[in-house]
Image 1 (cartoon, rainbow, N blue to C red):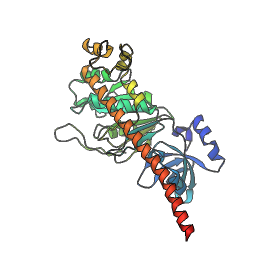
Image 2 (cartoon, one colour; image 1 turned 60 degrees about the horizontal axis):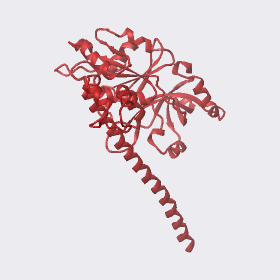
Image 3 (tube, helix red, strand yellow; image 1 turned 180 degrees about the vertical axis):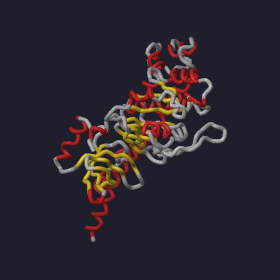
Length: 356
């Protein structure tokens, strides 16, 4: 297997140099299971697990290998097994906060070039959800592209496409139907050798159908829509990379029932570029865009340049990010305090032992 097909480049080579000198081999993680990772390298495909040392040294969940990561491995070809020793620096990552109350980062995909944000064009279409995905996509470091799937089930394609374009300023928007093979050729421009695309979207929006279309075979299981012809069923159960026949790689991900934000302040400015640009003309630098005199954002809303729903969404996401930042700060302080207390207790135990 030629590593260039998998996305290997000069930056990867430079980052791997020190591990190469230690006798390790470079590979890329193609799938993540319960305690193993599927890794592809020049010698083929293996199932690998991380070393005890890496497990011990890894403090945060986001430091563990993720699908799309380049890793330094020791393969055991005769067993089709291997060991992961190090994770190379990531050029990009799509992250979200783990579901629930825990303040931890979950990496959905790493080292991606393009993010396909898939949203179906039936009654499940939701511009506010689209804004959340765009926010995280911009923060990832990859280029977002909006895919409006199941256009064959839509009676007002142009209207929904215009609605998507209104919240995805400057981002390409494609209406497609894998069933009718409509709009699919336009997506081929993103599939180039060494380029990695991540498919993101809610359950049942048609991500698996897109993969099957470009692979030319039914690799990913696809289930029928509900009897009412609306929201599809969740099919993918884990993240996995597929190599496309025409070049490029694509990452399928399970549908996200919760899109919780993670450290996306810069992404907020990118996703809401219109509001960010208008706020530069506000009279007060710390304008909250509510009742302040000279607010350029409120003026843009009144003039119909910015939709009131979009401003409300912006405020909601901004508030959510500030709350998350506060929780992260509190968690960090508690961790630092715990780290200081533990050595002290250990020293006390040593002193007591010496007395005996």
